[in-house]
Image (cartoon, rainbow, N blue to C red; front, side, top):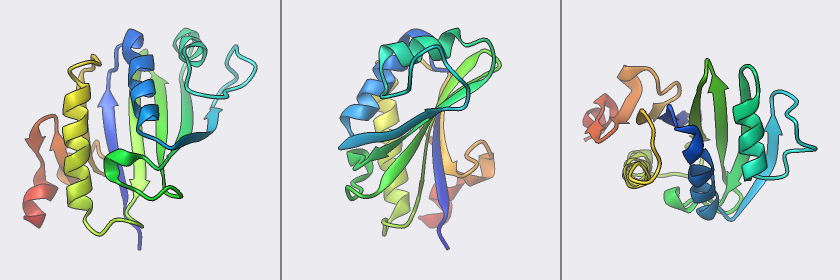
Length: 159
């Protein structure tokens, strides 16, 4: 049975959302299936661009924009494997989430530690309140691989 994994960048500063999305996009072979949970004031979500981010931030209420990132090289996945990206505006804050399953990985622990390293590097350029990753739902402290630079209980359980 496939397990689901998630990393969350919580409380991303609105001015830095596009910087983060462009960085994520730069690590992907292609971005597909960009959709929004609500009708935004743009003709369509064709990509992860400044107009989409502006409309998401202006939207009066909760909204989620999702996309598939194929060939996401941070986790060395094959080109037909995708990471689900979600940009969630809820309660006035914006979180960016990456979700994937373990179908192509022989060592998910290593993948999660690579993601932690990547998030640490990007946190130097993108302002956010926190970042963490684990088995879905990663908000559960007992299923975390990491919280910021600290290792979580799943890492110690597998080491």
